[in-house]
Amino acid sequence: MVALLAVLSASAIALFYAQGCLLYYGDATAHLNIARRIVDTRTPGGYQFGTVWLPLPHALMLPFVRSDRLWQNGLAGAIPSGICFVVAGLFVFLAARRAFSSGEAGTAACLLLALNPNLLYLQSLAMTEAVFLAALAALLYFTVRFRDGQSLWWAAAAGLAACAGSLARYDGWFPIPFVALFFLLTAERHRWVTAFLFAGIAALGPLSWLAHNWWYTGNILEFYNGPYSAQAIYQRQLDAGLPRYPGDREWGKAWLYFRSAAQLCAGWPLIWMGVAGAVAALFKRVLWPLALLALPPIFYVCSMYSSSTPIYVPHLWPFSYYNTRYGLAALPLLAFAAGALVAWVPARFQRLAATVVVLAGISGWLAYPRMENWICWKESQVNSEARRAWTRQTADFLRTEYRTGDGALIYFGDVAGIFQQASIPLRQTLHQDNEPLWWAAVARPDLFLWEKWAVAISGDPVSAALARARKSGARYDCVKTIAVKGAPVIEVYRRIP
Image (cartoon, rainbow, N blue to C red; front, side, top):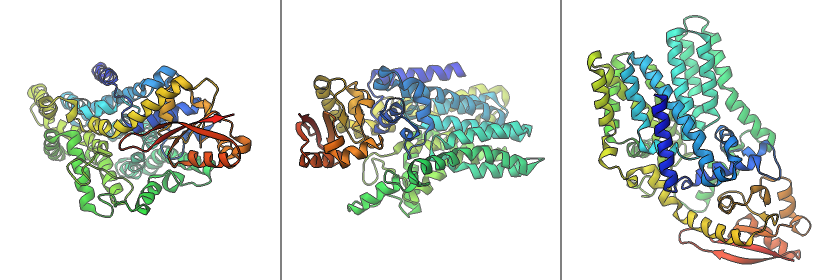
């Protein structure tokens, strides 16, 4: 099974690398650059991990992102993501095999998960989905093993898996109290010890992130209500007169949009098989795995209701693509539940049943095998067209004009992708995460701003800093303006001695 999963992962990475898709998602580029700035920056330290996105995916990229080539082409993120994909598939196989007492059921559940083209795409990128999926699948397996073996070692292993998941995505915080309750109810002896052992290990993830936020910003909830948080971004949009997210304080719409994204990510055949398999699993009294795997979908519906997470799908208002990949949260539940259909068949027919279930579950993808039909790929392709255009044009200009050591003032974000593509190390840029150098440069440019170049998105803090610099006598001329339809204007400035 490991070999098969590794072949699937490597083949998908090779395909999307050849298609030039590894940097389509803006988040993938951002994750790569956050990991890169940890090892390639003027002010090294833990603050370079940031305070919004959780640190584990970036930490896993560190051995690879040191390579200029792997950083620039996106493989620095694809390699650890692909490894996590293999780990996730293996644990799903082992958990389903034990839960249903059927190797064929485990194989079916694993392949229904691993052959999903949307997951294969995301595991080829510097994204967080595969990392969290590996942690969730490991948590599932260790809890199933504990149910059968009652060993404290399995509870401790489950705590480590939950801790890893909580350091990969905020979805990973949500299951911790429910899994602690599972141990409390299912432990045959030392119930409280078992539950506290799991909870104590699992809680190290959220607690360490709260401590990180407090240490570097003084606000323990910086990730939640700081200026770069999803809540703050949403509030700025509302203040600008933009409409509310679909599902904001509306349970019906929250469920509708998540369900629609899940259908686009998993396909109708697997959804119907998952529903039927869930009924079969309940009759077999396989309750806990379904409950655990249902928690991520519940989290996203609740998150949409509380306005933290928007999901846009092309057939519902506003008829666009955004966060459609969150629908993949339902994929492990559907794949695992569909494995129960195999377990219902007499043992001598289970191999045939597994083949039929897998082929039926992926029939939609086999019937329409074009990438255009893979919603996650389509979202990344549509939403990145303008960004890729201005990134390429600006990088081409800097590649010919910039000289090593010139230095550049930027506001870290999408602009960092320009320097990634232009093969300019991030340590040659000065950005807002280079404290206190950044604050000195923007507050007193007459004394501390000496970068030869500046790259700004029109109206951003770099533009304001350059305006102050001109008043104090430091002259920066705009030598290149890049305007792409549907994107903000990019301005490249050069310092005039």
